[in-house]
Image (spheres, rainbow, N blue to C red):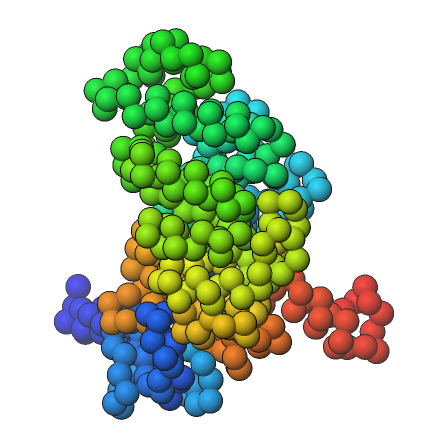
Length: 422
């Protein structure tokens, strides 16, 4: 190769590296960093896929975005969605959230669809990643949820089987006494398992034959492996329960079996808030609830989030299961309107899920964290506010969705027939 060709080749490699290494500076934003701090005006520098600096001093970047008057937050992380595993709830052919064979060990991870139409829609409303959960199984403990980054890459980015789910109470349909008995029998069985017993499926199958509860429930080796993880590997367990007496029983089970318990629903948590705080049990609540939806929720109170925050209880939010998981921020706004601090509400949407479910270097605007960031046109806890920019892994994400395309189709080129509009 001639000297000139070598020089050109070297230059092209260098030039390509410079282009790929372009830094992004977001300046003059009102920053809510996710750490329960009040907002402050500052600058954030993104290099590669991470936040390299956060400062109130002037910074330099290759691409500068002026966010004066805008709010910058970490990306929102729903903790109770089925994004990527359900398209239309009423059509079974679009659902991958249940199993006819497995119960406790059923995992939805391999069914995740990065091209789901729900992803662009929720992403354009500030959702950058999600904890997707399966349907409840026939077992009071059963089903594994996974964490997914909503970047639409076919090579799925996320963490497999980060939480197990379960339920107690009105949503289950069976006797509470039976539910708690089965739950305790399963946990007692799991506690008796030794790691050396988990060497092969054959060995696990023999354990099932020797266990009345495992054999009666027709558990499979995959189920037993998941149970073993629950008791021995600190796997988070999300139990849906609302009645105050049920919450106390769950706390007892947490302490007896050293469970990493998270309670979802918890509409009567205000009645036993002191015990929840002392047990250090995080909650996932819908702060919009103010009227009982069942006899398990007679003490529902719209001031619940603010009252629980004062006791130092870790809170996260959920929304009714639909396509609009971004409505968790509306719920957060209602919580703030009824006594919760603004910064704590932002934390409940962003950093708290990361800390509770061990989701890695996300959820806050701090040097060294992955740059999942949202620039909002106005207050993100107002339903009418929308993201102007969404960054996932430091990349500026296209906010086009099916909804924006439909809007464009029927509001532009009106002189043409509908069928000829792009």
